[in-house]
Image 1: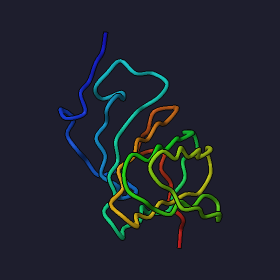
Image 2: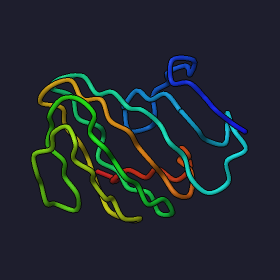
Image 3: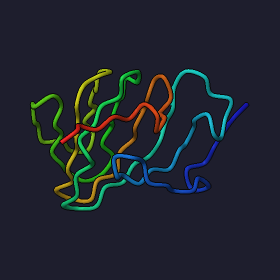
Length: 119
């Protein structure tokens, strides 16, 4: 049985600029097909717009408010909102209040599957 407590997970910064704590992923559990992390984004800050070629992502907003952009469509998001980000979809979230959210990725999140626009 694997049980990981959020408070025991060290935070790190992902390639998109958000600070996450991995709750369950390949680095701390015998995970094969998905990952679960908590992300925090300071007020006024966006993540860097990016996409994942392989991973489908879910965001679940726990605290705060923000603006979610997926492939050019934007919506305001708030606690209780669940957001589907399909593989290949360009996306970015901006915190209008400090955001705390859960991120699920399948297959598990990896820096190598995070791609940015060439400007």
